[in-house]
Length: 254
Image 1 (cartoon, helix red, strand yellow):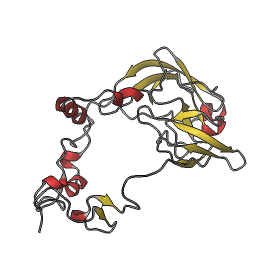
Image 2: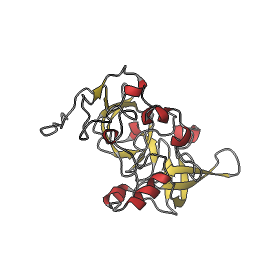
Image 3: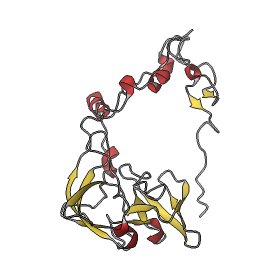
Image 4: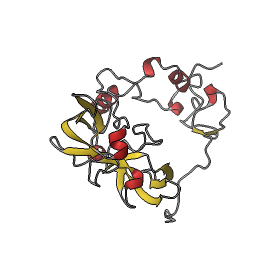
């Protein structure tokens, strides 16, 4: 019987869990309230900060509480072009401007939008990585649905009440600068989780990995594996619909 392999050990958590000690908090939209449903509310960008382990910068936005004499500070994902001292508006009647948050049903086709809710009120779950944006490609007011094209190229149908922020997420050029040396990769992954350096399966012994062993580094069997494979066997291309290079140009059906 072989050893418990890396993919099995990751399931238990332990040393593989995310390192969250110095993180700034969860970046979300405002909790939906009467002001956003029926009109708009103004916020002031107080600070743009770095969040360890996250590629995109965050913005601290200060709002006046609609019900009590106090201010509330929200943590938003920063949008390209956002700056300290900028006013941002959230709500159904907010105008179409970079940094404003409004229901995607209010946006014209072709609008660039990010940090979109998958279900109304979940406070943002799609298109949140640095440099990402989705495009509104269709509105159906009769059924209350909106079609968007996600960064992956796939199209998704969402309820028009789902909110999104106009513009693309900041920090898009982050991957343009190469890491160049192992030290930078070390510190990059230290802020995230224990996922680097990563030993290839074919470089291991047969006891350590399904792909290990043999003269010359080769897998020695098909790299595809079924969805129902047992945990110690489930490495490689799991339940792959297709393999190999994608040939030919991509056809856009719109």
